[in-house]
Image 1 (cartoon, each protein chain N blue to C red):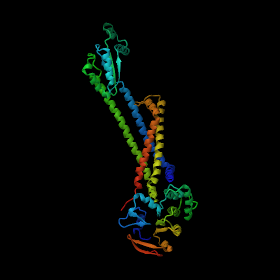
Image 2 (cartoon, rainbow over the protein chains, first blue to last red):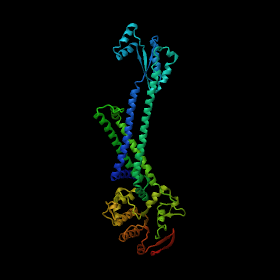
Image 3 (cartoon, rainbow over the protein chains, first blue to last red):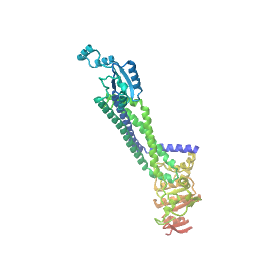
Length: 316
Length: 194
């Protein structure tokens, strides 16, 4: 047991010593890892921010059901409750006739024609239910529910639901476009992450390739597999940890610095303000993820890269 | 052990360290049957045999002391014992004072003596030396041979392969001659003859 501890201590120490002695190699590997980890982190934040912007847009999509004046209050309340029970419905707001009138006047001040109508026949605007869907791609089930005969009776025959005709087409198009954009964002992150992992893996593999003779010598002296491999794992994990710290601080400085320096809340489609606040709120989580990526790649790549030089030759 | 290039000297030594497996025949060293060795036993076998190579095979990023100490670290020796043992072998190979040098700062003869120190530090019963003088000038070659003689006197079997006629004739030891992979002569107190 004591010997085990001793050996473990030696493996870790050797890893650190090798790190210091191969400083130029370490610097090169860390530089590559930092750049690639930064790309991963940057694309994650960009895609999250982008999603946030899209969500803000799609949150504005709602459908209004105009209620018939013959519908009683209890009937409307039942309908509202039933709608709230649907999984595709996020929330339902009741807009009374008075509220609708106030909203209209606020949006169209000085509409004299409307004022004339108002004084002659009273408030022409129907009461309505404003339904906010969970996902703009999932409005059709709500519409199907509204189209049930017992529900149609409660609706204003003059004013069809706002999810029909041209408006239905427009909503569907927006919903589809945002869905594709979100999926493209996720795909981009995955592609960048994959490329980065491959680049890091190859860099670390090359570093070990340079020292294959050393591994051969250790083997000839009778060193066990883990006594040889251990220091390489320690060294590469060190690269991973340092690179994760560097890349996270780099991205942190980049977003927060640009957010305050530019005094701008967004650069084109990228909402810098949101990105920097997201980064601030999740710094610890993102750093942990970066560290995990660095440590896992460091370990796995050194195990795979040393494997072929550790094999016992069985040439016949 | 003598023999022309390609006679099979190095192959024989590689078979003994299990760098290669025989296509036929049996190898038994010190009661260990190589046919029954698993891959995981190979490190243990190599720890019992000291090996010296023509190209030294020192670890380039480690000092003289660390190169020798590595052989002991592998077998799990404690630091205090390593600190005590390494100077002793450095004394045997006449390299006192070079502990902190890197291999590249040493001459060929010195490097080979570091390699010998590393091979004997675990006190193996057998020391295999594959043309250890091949890359050295006559004076340094003879330094190396004298060290090997000293080790032999301490009770270690030394298996030396060489091309150097002068060394064989001066040593007056058992000489095994290999030709085309077969032993063509095996005599005690012999002279170089091919």
